[in-house]
Amino acid sequence: MGRYTGPVCRLCRRVEDKLFLKGNRCLSPKCAVDKRGARVAPRGMRRRRLSDRGLQLREKQKARFTYGVMETQFRRVFAAATHMPGVTGDNLVQLLERRLDNVVYRLGFADSRANARQLILHGHLQVNGRKVDIPSFLMRPEDKVAWKQRSQGLTPYEEAKQKQLAFLPGWLSMDKENMEGQLLSIPSRAEVDVRLDEKAIVEYYAR
Image (cartoon, rainbow, N blue to C red; front, side, top):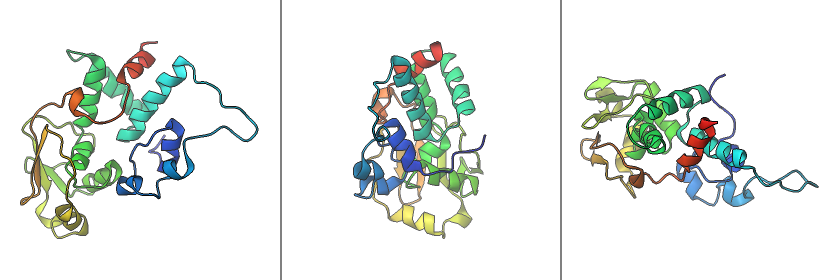
């Protein structure tokens, strides 16, 4: 099964939360969740209360949709998290945050993680001076990500250079003049602002 290509606003309504899949549009009055509300039951039917299993599934889907990860790939990330020392839920969030597409998004090089994936797949970015075209590439502390020389005259580069970041996580640094970002450290759960109940995800896979 390939990557989801349907309306991404439908994913937000499905999990009944705003996932910011369309970048700045999600902050505007055009946001579908704000305009139409969360998912509702079909006409004439009453909404049923979700079971514990349903709530766990919703959290897992919320994480998948937020980071743009397919089911099989998400299972692999979770399996890796279980083999790391520490709390599995925290490890899961750390691995997802260290993905190259997420780091590019966090640095403001792209308006959304989907746009970040597109930039990476088209070969516009490099890590430690070498081209990397794999969105799931796992960044390590002290790794640097920057635009390729030949991509610095393109519109996405100019838009990113003019953008003023409202917030930059403490585990990242940004050289705005050279448009180069660096992963300073492994992010802690407290430093990640994504609204997820990772404990529910662990419970989902524990069954």
